[in-house]
Image (cartoon, rainbow over the protein chains, first blue to last red):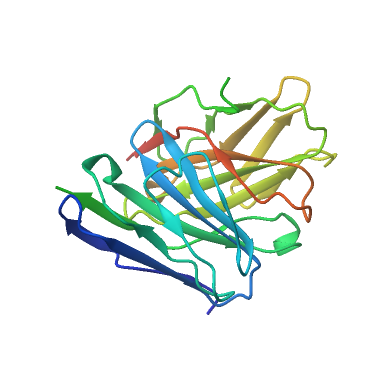
Length: 115
Length: 118
């Protein structure tokens, strides 16, 4: 089954404790991206990657890091989480000609709470 | 300026009736794509429908149709014969640039929470 898998789905952590949210896709997509969703703000892009070893900042990259060492994986790293990073996080992937639309395929989301 | 505007934070509709969710967009790129996603209370993002800027006809997918008015820069989602399971948050999104190009980024609106009443 074609899917984007994120882990963990739910996490409560404390300020300053480094954490990583993993993302893996099995559709051989070149493009992967992270979004955060906050009430009243919709989804905003954090980082994206056009291919292996190619990453770039989105609209809200502060406080986050990413890496793309393998095509299928695109982890999101919070080196020193703060309460304002409490959010619902989505990983998404896509590829040229996907469905003819370039739609994004989303993971199920990771709900992160930073105390 | 916001690129995607959804002016209805919440909407209510009776079961079996039709409902229109509004979306306006702003871009100077002649080639773009417009998407609608559904987010039920379980949280996942479900792709519903797509409209390309050069598509001549309005997109339809089952009970979903997209009322595309290019001159007005609007891309409203119409859900016919609403069902209880349609209760969810709905997001309008835009990709600037052609499908199959180098830009995959979607810019999202703030969403509309639709409640279907029995």
